[in-house]
Length: 466
Image 1 (cartoon, rainbow, N blue to C red):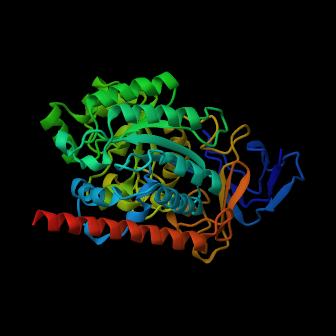
Image 2 (cartoon, rainbow, N blue to C red):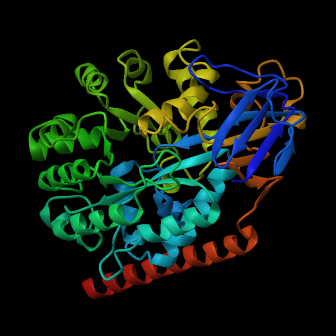
Image 3 (tube, one colour):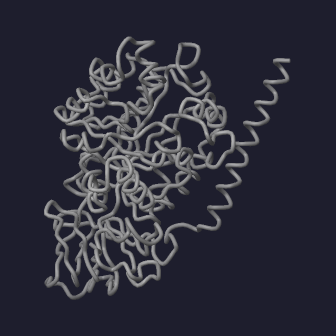
């Protein structure tokens, strides 16, 4: 197996349970696995040696909620300055024109951005399968992840409740439930790898209470547990969602989850803003996790996650970018900075330190994904997933007093090197497995095509209506 030695680091921030640091330390990796870490390790040579003098090494950030397909619907004027339901209604009419190649290119773009911000593991939620388009969309995301070199956790999403049945999405982007369940089984059987250092794990992820039926939730839960895979969905994101559940189902969103089998240690939700005290206590006692997506929540005016109450109740909390279209970026290091500032403002300046935020984006996120045996911290026996920053960069001048907090509080949200499973995939401003310029051109062309197709379709519908 190939070996990698990272030596003479300014500091190594492990984010293990005792949050150890190793000034002047080194790391030895064999294959994907860290074999030694510390100041004086018994390894002086390796197949590849990186002199990390002046660099600070951190465990790779972990993104617990994303929608990579949305990368091509960023910065669209009609989708700005609106709340979630209006935002979705606007974008559904564009997403219905997405094609497999668009999915591949949008995944390559989003995953590349994430690697450049120190993110090494990405959980993605794909749930748009337009009429007449191949159902094998997630296959394109997995192909992109393998090529670019990330650790990937795709979740096979679904929408079955179209407008004709009282749901929010148009009928053209929903699927029949038997088709959903059959393809979910296919994706799990083809791609899920439960091994410790797996590069692909798969989850089951009906989209939201306003886009799937209770029957699909029940059957999806049974299917996931029969395969031993994890379960993910949006929940308690907006007040509109809570109102929808009360008006159409006569219960709150978490009550729906409890009734359909969607609680337990194998479940994590995205957002979790509108949980009440009883529900937060339930989440803590049942072991559910929550992906916190601060930028998206602020952009859409959804509210602020009650993160302090959750942490006090033992809820597992991780960090997520959410879809690029509700964030307009795929930068997890930027998300860390936003998270810290948001909760300073909302909960007070002593509520969450920068180090606490970093812990949630690493060890906390690993717990949310049920992968803490391999990722989330740098320790012997864990994966060699990490990023480095060069402390000599100008934006860190005058700030070298706390290496742990440095990339959260100061500088620009970028890193100098990213390593996944002992392999360097990004360094000195460039992705190593991608022609970035060529990708950017292809990606923008695909985005233009989607927008132009959507505009022509809208115009044709308007003329027919007249």
